[in-house]
Image (cartoon, rainbow, N blue to C red; front, side, top):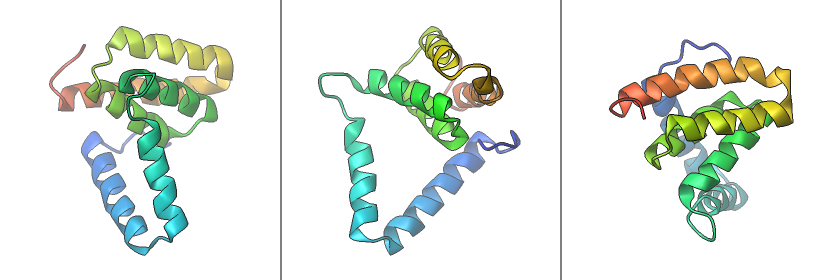
Length: 123
């Protein structure tokens, strides 16, 4: 998902995988540690993975990062988040971020539809 909503779910996944591989192959120790820290942060602890991904989604919407929004929607779906949970998370992002979040919400809902279709339907 980018600022042009034409990137499909599969294109997004392929782009992300390819570029992450390239970055990690050439990156410094700092780069690799940051990527590891990011991964570890979303593992279950006092909060379960789904809750952490919903928090990441809300923050990404407020920060207006479409790639991050797509990533967290995908992770939320994989963690079993329902559409009701996702839309309540969208509401939190709207309240915190204001109307500037609305264009990102539109793309988020479009990506959620693609994600659900790719992963076997709505929830």
